[in-house]
Length: 228
Image (cartoon, rainbow, N blue to C red):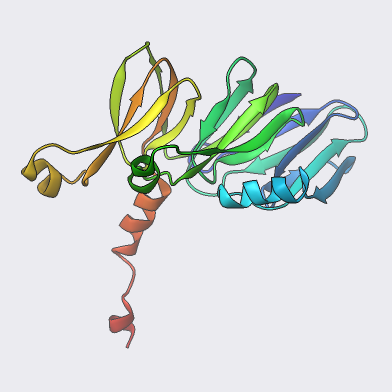
């Protein structure tokens, strides 16, 4: 399978498939496809798989796209401003924020990752349940805004604004720390908590979490009082 990413702020990934090759995607992600592409909506993984996807911010159903002949194409678009990243799942599992999944090859398993620490799930900005991808193959992930990749050495720690963690390898430990200092906590603009990531492993940090973007846009929307 070959891929090309078009665009920048609202990108689209175009996949070229060989005969009988297939990918599966979240519902509503397809932008266009060749005439010789078959599309089949299904509940991948049965009821349990559908429930896992639903509670991790995805859709209960997925859509399979299978090429009847070689060289046919299908394109999937980003649902909000950001980047599309391609990951080769092999040696390690990948853990992503909710709503991250776009599409993947059939050999990639879409599962859930449950935060073991109550504080991390409640205050970390990513929720108790995140998306987890295992198996072997390629998965295409949506990130909010621009994205920076960092390689953490064993024991290396970084602090990240809540909601800015886009993805990380499962060898990375995620926890929550309270912002130190009264003025930092209430006047620094970073909130009460920061997410701590501890290596080894790769992490991907996003510049504009969609919840922050919604908060900024809401400032300019007319309030219900003004409309009255």
